[in-house]
Image 1 (cartoon, one colour):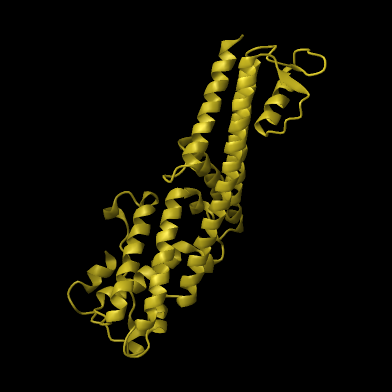
Image 2: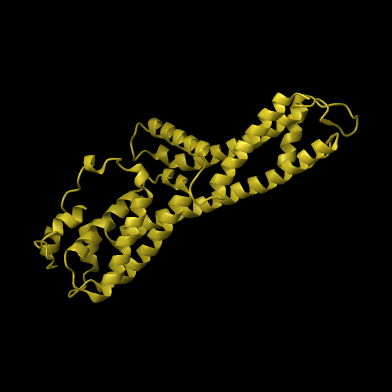
Length: 311
């Protein structure tokens, strides 16, 4: 037996299995290798799009990442098992002739074992290789099935991300428009149910972003489905209402929950923001002329109003 093949195969198999477990069964994001691979693929697409955020090429980055990651996981398990079988020339033999298999035939055997195809034209020669075949077969069944299920959950999270962008876009194209559309004359109470719905969606999206960081790389060229501008828009609108001393008892709790959900989301994705907040460009003070023209009274001159909006 060539132990070098077996050790190398075991390491590759276990590292791949650990990557799948960390990515699929953990709520703390992907494995180290999977994360680096994801970033590398995104960088390739971003470079190919000439670093233009509105390029349609970026729409294919997310699906491509999922496909490449799945192929790499399968290839890692396959290669690991193949190298382990290569440790012994007579580990696998033909079921009919009992002749030891070639490397290509061992590669074929490793593939149909992981896929649980079970053709039966080759077989293991002793108890050790039989047990290894059984373990590999169960591993392939569990991991590959779980990986596909994981990708379905990712696509569901991406759908929620698009829904969030569309929902905010329907409320208004700008923060000022959201406020104007929510003003019913004396107060903003009709915004309360929308804020509660948004809070629930934002909390769920934040959890999805932690569990499935890959959704960050699903790009929508349609501005109406882009979540980041939507979050900025609703954050600015809610900030104006929160710091503008809006008196509406029925809006206070929904507004507080919305601000909390926004803080949770920003905290979840802060790893992609400027490392030193002091160097980040401060946002401009919102233009409230549209609100004044519509007769919406906000105490914009009270202490802390501008500071609260820019915090």
